[in-house]
Amino acid sequence: MDLLAIGETMVMVTPRPGGRLDAHSSFLLRPGGAESNVAALLSALGHRTAWAGAVGNDPLGDIVVNSLRERGVEVGLVRRDAERPTAVYFKDPGPEGTKVYYYRSGSAAAAMSTADLAAWTGCPARVVHLTGITAAISPQGRELTHHLLAGRPLGTALASFDVNHRPALWSAADAAPVLLDLAQRSDIVFVGRDEAETLWGTPDAGSVRKLIDRPGHLIVKDAAVEAVGFTPDGECRVPATPVEVVDAVGAGDAFAAGWLSGLLDGRDETTRLRLGHFAASRVLRSPSDLAELPRAAEVVAGFTAGPATVPGGSRATERESDRPCRKP
Image 1 (cartoon, helix red, strand yellow):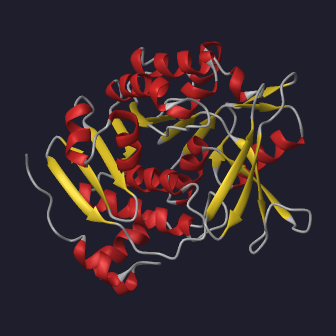
Image 2 (cartoon, helix red, strand yellow):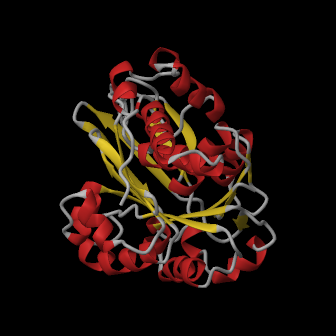
């Protein structure tokens, strides 16, 4: 596998476009989970991916497993729990943004632990992708995440970690030291600039790098402004693609998928960041956490040929992002 993603996936209940979370709307049921989102979007970009997690032995679990399989994600490592349910969350889109309501207490995913590792070691991958959400949903989830990053039981795979602080699950004061330790133990780290400021008081990308100094790759996402990539070769900044936002949920996962696609294909940091912006822009324009993506080679060919040929690209942004990266 190119990537093995490990974590919680729930069933997302979202109104059809134009609807709200009320008795008069009709709804779509789709899988929603930070880690499986990355796996599904990477699969769309042309990579072999797998997702490992736990869902209930119920119809909602069937929706998660079957939908991800249909998107090209290998789901043979998913544990079906006969005693615990599949978690659910509801989206309520509104003019001021989308509110999300989670119902995950006592779920199958919350019971994931190091005992699940034995079933996952038979799936070697180039990258293992984790997020801070698994560390937040239960004590055993936190132990599992720490062991995956500190003990590296899955071999030589690069460890990719998206900080993904969820205030509804734990406060910034409780999360900050745990998430910093997990980030420092990773090879690749994704974090939002505002998220980092909330957790650690870092006002800009450079101060985040001074704090998270051990990973070879640190990507700081500054929402609609830019993304900054720190690598052993230096620092790279690429402006975000301006888009009309339908729903921002899932855009960070899409960015991680795009960047990881570039890494897996051996592309330079500028191209990785541009792929991240491209994938995120597609999800920002979608009512769900996922969106249809062309193969990465097609997207990159558009970068090379010019902005007018980039699927869904922005002419001004593509020109600006051609500037070189700085050496340390």
